[in-house]
Length: 303
Length: 270
Image (cartoon, rainbow over all chains, first blue to last red; front, side):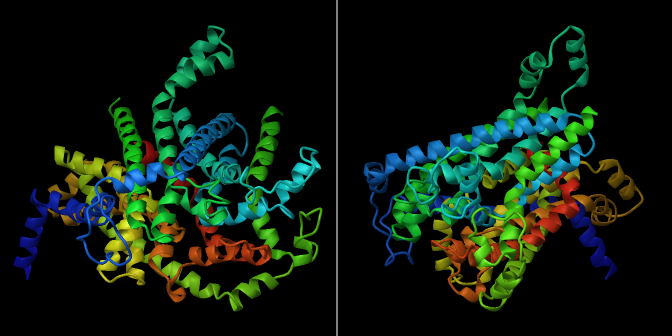
């Protein structure tokens, strides 16, 4: 018994243990993430129907699925919507997060307490955020319409999510609300790590606070900013749950973005090849952004 | 004086920001006449628990919540077991291979579930796992595992190697040194990562809605979707459902708030 124990200890102490310990996770991710990515690529060049979904050997159609998508009149609409949604979210979440981070950086009683409270928005499941915002934006009894009317900004109700002209704005607002705290917390960490002595020197030289912000804070914050912008682009492209709950991509595809389109093709029209082709196009974009993220994080670690 | 002025501005900002959460709770407590009243009432005049009774008796929220807890607890256990070895190795062993694995883990973290769900559905169908909780657990773990590895790796990296070496000089094996020295020091990291993984899994929607069509197996996210996905107008009941579902999340967050904030910033940027 004792002998076995010693053998085990020696095995665990050997150098061979490292690849083994990483191995379980690596295999898991290879099978449940790597394999689906490759499988997706394969389906995107095949004709996949409900009838042949059980096998792997299916008619090869080359890039037909891709051409069909690009010729689809929906493609430019979904493309525009995705661009609007991603840019609107990334920019406004960043600006909101930066404003809050700068505000809470000032020393006052309760600063970290209130900052922590605001982070609560980020921890909520997207399904709940979608449900609550759908109710806030309701046209008849929604509290947002009531507030806008009370302030005299609009005369009649806005049909936020049932009107094709505003549905995309509605879901974007909800997602900005969700993303601001995450931006705030990462920017606050970035701000806290900046060297204070440079600010003192600049203040002695007579630089005002606005001057100090543009000449010192922004340039020094750049590594954090790159990592954060890449991360929020990636997170925004996952905003499927929220849109699916609030609008289903509608009305008439006015809030349809690529992940929603992909899901709609696969799970509602059973056009698995088309859904896979949309996914693959998105994956390429996400991978490129992810490489920027990985590079900027690693550059920061080395510096 | 100026400092207290800032505190009151902060109170207004936080109140304004958290208004949607407040509105969820008060809407759940209103009778339907008051829910549709114009102007809306900020504080319910006649608070009632009728909506809560309705979702427990008629919507069977208990079953949904049980499934949510079973699935997220299993995901958390599986994630932490798998992540421990990988995170520890990645923190301690430097080599080209380890670097490659780390980049792979970071890249797998960024893949959006809605884009992975099509091939996963097909693969799980071929494995005969559609309509099992196991499929949801395995699929959700792909989302939580990379996150846990990256976060725990930072935690282990903060435990000084010297302490482990000292224990090993005293004659204990690497396993004993890990269990007696490293693990206790990484305790806080485990609590934060465990809580965040649980919350991520608890809020997961795409995988269960695609892999399960038996109502008896579905988690509360799918139940809530059934409520508000359509043109639903019974907002009192919908908000009660959302409130019951999300209150545990808010409690966990309040308890661990400080630690989550510091863990998040360390894990995401380093």
